[in-house]
Image (cartoon, protein in one colour):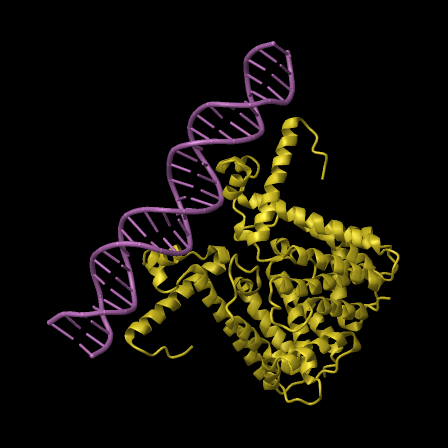
Length: 237
Length: 237
DNA sequence: GCCGGAAGGTTATATCGTCTAACTTTCGCT
DNA sequence: AGCGAAAGTTAGACGATATAACCTTCCGGC
């Protein structure tokens, strides 16, 4: 986080915001999103009621902050996983990334659900989340840039190629993570990353929500199978 | 639904329960799960407040009913899709099933999220949901029973085979949907169905939650790609 | 050093939601 | 005809979000 310099007032403010978020995360872990209650946070802090509104304009505002933090967190651990395995073959890098992602998700399921569970009633994701989500996906893009996609995924590759061609920001984002080798690198890289992300979520949301309860498989095995076959589809080394 | 015979009292009761659920679905469609409020339902019905508790013991009780209805609904449309395409090759049957499933989800996203969005605070899924979920998956099991899985999915197939061997109910459920041809039909069928379900959810939850907003692809294409490659993995005809 | 004003905190209150308690009314059934 | 359960009512406890109106602390410029 930034240094939060400024006067002592600003520093105190930032610290209090931090404490509030901390307690909110505890409530989240204990009872899910619905259990995050400003009044109870206030009580925990020894404050009373409306004082919290000095720090967060509304409950949604607090939740937004938690969501942004979580995205940042994920981006960080994924960057770390990517760095840790940078020298290894693409398949293993994918495995490492996915493993880090899954660990994050299953060790703090409520936080994962905060990001990917049902969107809140009237809640509209702040535009920053798109940026953050992209940052998180970056490492996946890099991996699939080297892929040679099977015919079955061709139309998806084509759509992604067109997307990158249409929006310069996207092309720039891809370029940031790849050293372009061929012509439609961007399309392949984006398609692979999208599929990887989608498959991870397929497994993880079901696992984290407990929908696999009573089914005789190890979710980790399912996830690895999903990524294994994806790596095959893109002929990853 | 059953004839709900019995006295006129029972019939009236059942009808009122139906109206309550109807209004609840409307609120769900308009504002998500959080927008379902017993008091407002009561107002809509011209009743006042606590009267609803004669029909549903609690808000969670009402939600449970909605969830069960939704599962039944899905099972029904999937059965229909399976019947509609019974004579066609496995790949096309998969496509038909997935299409029906996706249509259901995207035309009533809130209802889909009711089933697969974040679980409610203290809500524990009634055991019936497991039954219902299994019923919904049945048609997928049938399709993959004919598959010849690639080596990449072997460990998953093995786990599912062991599961069926361990729990007679599961074996019976599989047998109900297949005409066993080989030895480990059950393992293959279950693994394929599980993967199909997982992939569908990966795409659909992201789509329905709007997480694909601003990404340059058609979710339908992504879904078809995902299933196409799965069909390849299982060498479906 | 001092004092003006913003930031932090308070209590009171409106509103809305779930759910219980206690009472009354309706109406099917014997 | 009338018993009794089902259906409905009002009153109210409780907890949550959020606003209003009002003190209090203390940073910072002069």
